[in-house]
Image 1 (cartoon, rainbow, N blue to C red):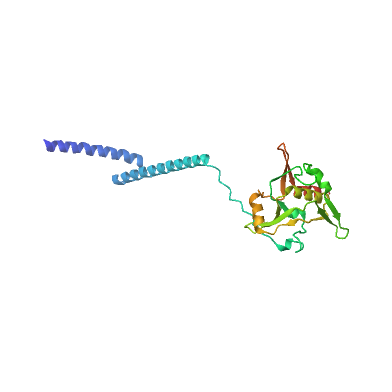
Image 2 (image 1 turned 60 degrees about the horizontal axis):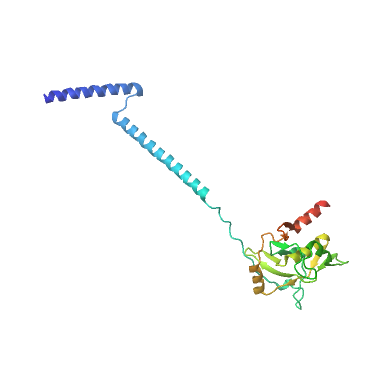
Length: 245
């Protein structure tokens, strides 16, 4: 009996496989071995799982990066170069004194702002816009050079950046503004001033440490007592004078 049941069961299975094979053959065209179909189907499923895994990983990485970008602090700019003392004897007009002969526009502001009034001197608290008129001006008839002086020589020092750039600077920005404005009033004549050139490296470095030197040393702000500020750049003034001609 057991043998008959086994034979019967085997016959039913064979009929089922035969029917499935015929249906599969009708839809897929040329017949393929059963094992080959099973391998292809398993390979397709593996590829689908890998593709889905890669897409999920990319989506997760993108979301993580977005959250990092949104919550991250802005990147800090590269550190600014530091000025250092760079005295030169060639800046001194005579070895008998520390005065030099320089163009007022070759001196830069070692300060971001200056008071809009004279802080010291014969006319303290007087607006700077009036002080410039009292600057001493000697127009040399031969070489057309304008020598601009002031009651107190302005202190100037030479500094250098690691990149190699050298610059004459002053922490007495309000004096420089008076001299530059006097020179601008007589532009395009050549102007010269006689500043006191600092030559001691320690003194110069102390000046640099206590100063707030801007990136653009050709410009500054005139600061009033009420907090308002007026921008000044001698380059802008020269440009406007050139356009008006």
